[in-house]
Image 1 (cartoon, rainbow, N blue to C red):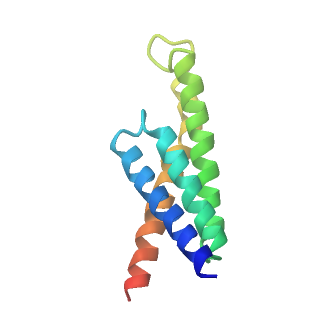
Image 2 (cartoon, one colour):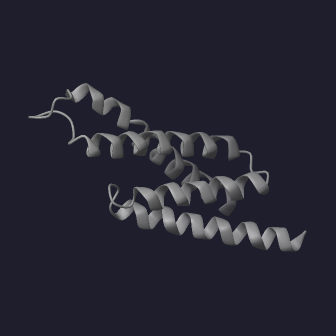
Image 3 (spheres, one colour):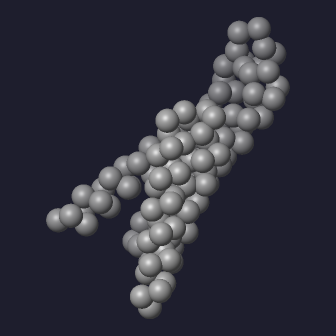
Length: 115
């Protein structure tokens, strides 16, 4: 049982570190944010954290938003002189929403642990 706890703790710390490093540059670091969010969701699942489903939902939102961000980037972007209107940018919104969900959950879980 102790070995499982050590393993999940290491995965959690690596996930949070990757998440924070990716946050420095959200466009280029989006892959690190996905990796960090996935590791956080995995560790909270194995430790039976009560917020593990929310972490997984945030991961899915981040993946969805980043996918469309890369897709629109490959098409040349949207708005301006592009053939895509600005409304296509709404498909990228799940990325910052999932990021914000993860940040709020990380902060709230650490505050509750200290009490």
